[in-house]
Amino acid sequence: KSVKDDESGENSENAANEQGEPIQKPLAIGDVWRCHARTNLPMLAAGDVVQFSVDMVAGTGLIEVLKPRRTLITRPDRYHKVKPVAANADVLVIVFAPLPKPAVNLIDRYLLVARTFDVKPLLVLNKADLLAEHQDVVQIFQEYQELGEKYGFEILATSGVSGQGVDELQARIDGKLAIFAGQSGVGKSSLINRLLPHAEQATNEISVGSQLGQHTTTTSRLLAYDDGNLEAGGIIDTPGIREYGVWHLPADEVLAGFDELNALAGECQFRDCSHAPNAKGCALWQAAQAGQVLPRRIESLLELMAEAGTQDKAVK
Ligand code: GDP
Ligand code: ZN
Image (tube, rainbow, N blue to C red; front, side, top):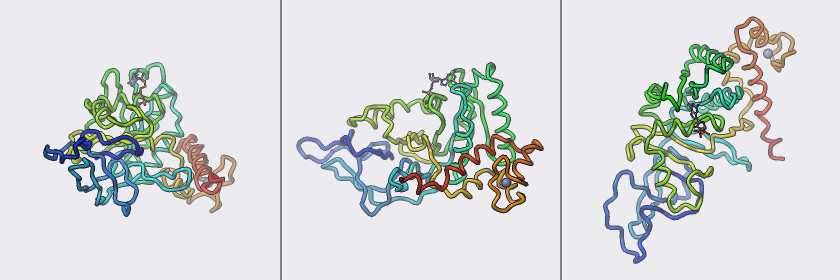
């Protein structure tokens, strides 16, 4: 049900009793078991569905089978080992807000992540109660709304304070496994707590016995809406999605993540067009000048393309 990145801490609920006697109570759905994984299994991530056997004396489990994954978001660690971030996520909820001021490139970065790993993006403008004083953010909202209409994603306005839009958000992710991404301070935790009233409790439960405390950044969790019934959906809360670098992606994969620009790139005068603002005959900038695409989307693209394919540089 839940996989922790750290290896410290003891099993909580089912810890072995001191006398070494088998646990008497029956296994129940929703129980938390600390498990080891068979060494032939790939690295596991929050959201994975597994089959495990239990040792009733030790109170621990052994994960034997990893079920096929619908989706898998990965990222490379600093040693270039590709690590799973979240498994089986259906929706990547990309949260931004009037405050902290949106780093627009970050929205595009997460749209790219969603595209690359075939997870449906859902944009959420939270803190809608603060919009009146932030017309520039209203405009960003409208721009992404237009983009979403063309390329098949939705954008909602919510407020963790007034509750506006929370039901709609809930309806969009109901029965699905959602993963939340976005700048720190935009209100992800507040939204998650509203969507999942027992989230706080779940945090405590799973963190019992761990030395790392409750809001540690090294722990990934799956907060299920209905314990033991993954079909009901839930939320994957993982630090792995923060500060998501794209340097392990090939540059053309980055371009493919920007639908409206990718569609134009074939029309650039030169096949190896850099799409730089001064590039001769660049169809992207021509379309921007004609008001058909947003210049800042091209800027995001260029920034992400410059970052992509730099794997070898990054290791030095
Ligand atoms: P996270 O870092 O994205 O998880 O953000 P938090 O959930 O910790 O929220 C950051 C701050 O924003 C907290 O002080 C919240 O009370 C506040 N906040 C969250 N949602 C809203 C909202 O919809 N409107 C306003 N005005 N403040 C909010
Ligand atoms: Zn070009």
